[in-house]
Length: 87
Image (tube, rainbow, N blue to C red):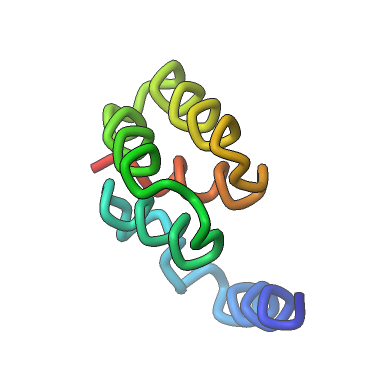
């Protein structure tokens, strides 16, 4: 929580000059986001979900999120990972 507050303050202080995390988005970023924060997830399911989300459409992101949630990935982690999936 402290890191998020510090980063938010930094972004505000710099007038938004810091790039958003989604700027480096890819299915790989999605995959590692999940496995670093929820290592008990099945890597095959995570890979499939991230590849689904890489299409970048609203339906693809919803499908990515749903697949990760069925794997019991916490909602916040699933949302952030799927947001990172589009290329």
